[in-house]
Image 1 (spheres, helix red, strand yellow):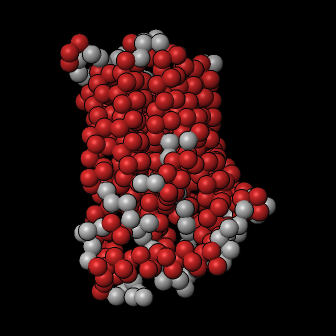
Image 2 (cartoon, helix red, strand yellow; image 1 turned 30 degrees about the vertical axis):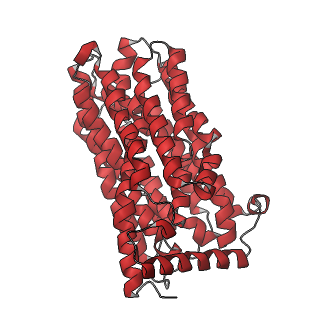
Image 3 (cartoon, rainbow, N blue to C red; image 1 turned 30 degrees about the horizontal axis):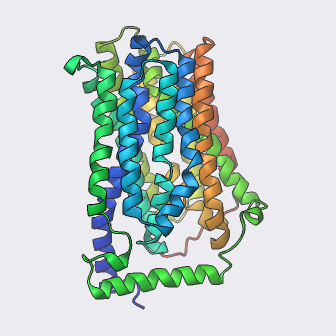
Length: 437
């Protein structure tokens, strides 16, 4: 079997990357945009519909309830049925649900819309993880994933700027917040219709690869599966949960996302409060124009941390540095009576580090655990990453409803980042500095 340095292997992986990664990146951008755009539309919705902060917190959190319910079945569909058909179903239904949110008029309708959106999108990220195992050998898989993860801050930055434009519109008698959901949900439907024609399920179906390239890729991936089974790939989750490293990883991402997911949903509202704006209309547009760059610098955080951690063959402390610095800079932004530009500087630095932790984080399970234990633990760790989506949004909604300040909410979220760093710092990892990059 040819090595990764063989011309056939290099040609094959180059074709796979150029064929699949742009499409998956686009899907990921749209996915994050459609789960986060309620936080942008909130600036007008709360005035137009009279929704309370508690209602928004509950609605934003219900997305993650629906998401968790169908997460594991979604991954199984990709493994045993068809990735392109499953992703097409996900994209079309979540696009329709996102667009349908423009029709809500009551809090209960908003709750149902967000729950349905979570159900529709469930299985997307786990499905992508499984899909990567069908196309990328283990030695290059994390690098390919890092490229896709840039889509998180990219989608949030794009969403803030696009929403700023859409909030100004009143086409066809609809409000700007309604156009946010309609026009930001429509790309998912379009991409879902095209997905069956643009995606390929397995290497054996790839007519765009040569026979030699298909044979090399299928043989390489089959050998990896055999090696995993030989090493005990059937380790049970019950056994993995007895390992301290699994709990440190799970609690680390739980608390980090308690801060991070809440930040995505509420940052625009917090920026509005920090700016001292109370009116709607132009003020809401200005708020999003200030919010977008905070997410935009996150792209630099993903790129730098992924490059620097791989270059130095050190991942744990890169992850911890991102978590702790995000918490510290977020806490600094909450100090009252600061000049706006100083407070905004803290927020931008926070945006950099809040996106710098997750690329090195997802390398840690393979360093701290045997390959078989890592395989069965990742599902549990990923569930731990999504539960805070409900808790964080609900807690912030309750805090706002109780009359607590934006600074108090930011300190709560900062505490999540800091606690996440504490738990990840306890993960027992031996850095593999002698491993090939």
